Image (tube, rainbow, N blue to C red; front, side, top):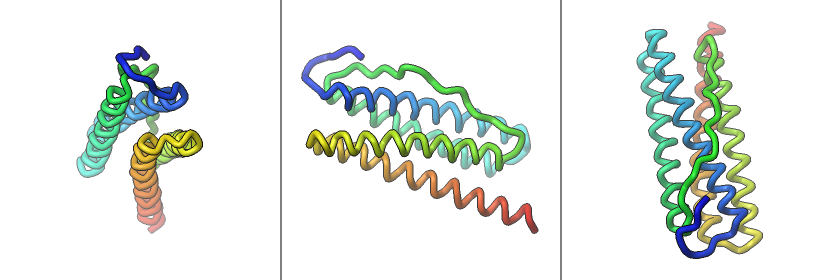
Length: 152
């Protein structure tokens, strides 16, 4: 990461860099899954996954804005490969695991920024954490609904 100006905590910048990589990976994941599900002739599910990709792109844009505000040029280090599977349930299991990884990252970022009394950064990560927890809960509910319909 290249510093533009100003000073920022290097650990927080590390969390932001990893968060940007995760969020851009999520965009790739959900976009790829949406296209895959489209080939399965499931347009409603494809739309939900595409909408999730848009949400994650919004998170990535917020992280980029935060990095710029802290005087750092954004740099996502590496995208993770999209996790696919032969069924919607398999895809959602991968998605839930991915969201839980992101939740853990944000929880650690919140704890770090609370410890160093960086109120603005703590609030920034808390907002993302709340949204990712909501995503995980929605995925869990969706999985439960799919499992109930396949048991009928």
